Length: 363
Ligand code: NAP
Ligand code: ZN
Image (cartoon, rainbow, N blue to C red; front, side, top):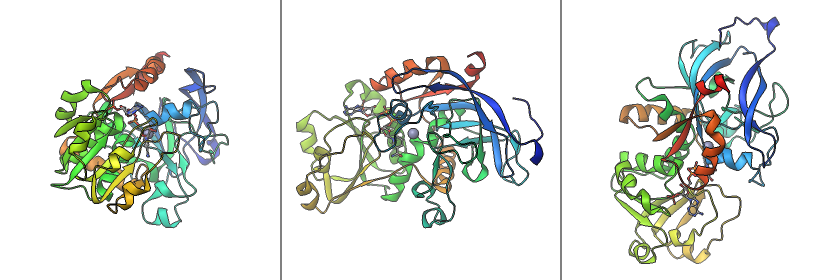
């Protein structure tokens, strides 16, 4: 992309290349979309890598009844790239800088959530894709594109010592697990369970381990055992093994459930000690059945969490830079995105696909 000089009068739109789905049953195919020319507070980023989150698949296939998909849909909210242009009021970034964008591109900036750096809970937030686009109409388009234009408050600085393909997934899988792990006080000596060793789960293991916790992974995939240990787990349990599950009853301080499909959470609630908490970040559409007795008998709690605010996302990136943490990725060209979705459904990815956006040039 060539750096172009914008004046207020010349601001309009420009064409960007991307991959979009036309319906819930369509494959993702090459497309051209309009992006806004940068406004005063905007940062324009050439996208280098974009991770594939299971939420992308849920949204493309219209699997969430609470968030119906508007088509065409361009997903992607694990974005890392290089700044190509900035608006006149931008001071934090300049062309050539590395930059990242996660799941949020706007919020009202005035509500109690925004005022306390919890933009992810703002009632008027704009998600990176499938949210009303207040500049161009229609909906926002995500990171399966060659460039994006975002208000500078929602752009993160990328530490220069980390591998960029592995940084991209930190923008969703990373912050979605880091935030509840910090909120629930995971630290040295705590016993932490991670349910599901996928994109989110493997980041949760890395963070909980880095914070000194004793980490137990619950999986349906026996063949992930060696990986789990390498990633920082102390034990790995096949969730269908009831004997093993029983041995851990009433012992966990905190369990993070990252599972993307319908499953029974009551067997995990039984593993919490008194006042233990299970937090759900996985987002299957169907409501969970929860036994009240499982909770009340030990004053246990169940809660949810979604991504993280901008300040905490930057904190997480800086933590990763210090501890040399990135996602384990399989880098793919954009032309393999539909195949990657099918493999993700089979838990056949170690542990995140990261799209090399240079491949879009030949799409
Ligand atoms: P992923 O890479 O596909 O990992 C999901 C893991 O869940 C799989 O690797 C598998 O782990 C386990 N799993 C899959 N089907 C299962 C089943 N039927 N029963 C039990 N376990 C099963 O997905 P992800 O990108 O990590 O996302 C996970 C979920 O979090 C998705 O629903 C996504 O939408 C949601 N999410 C939420 C937020 C948020 O803000 N709260 C942010 C991002 C994503 P094993 O192979 O180890 O069993
Ligand atoms: Zn995501």
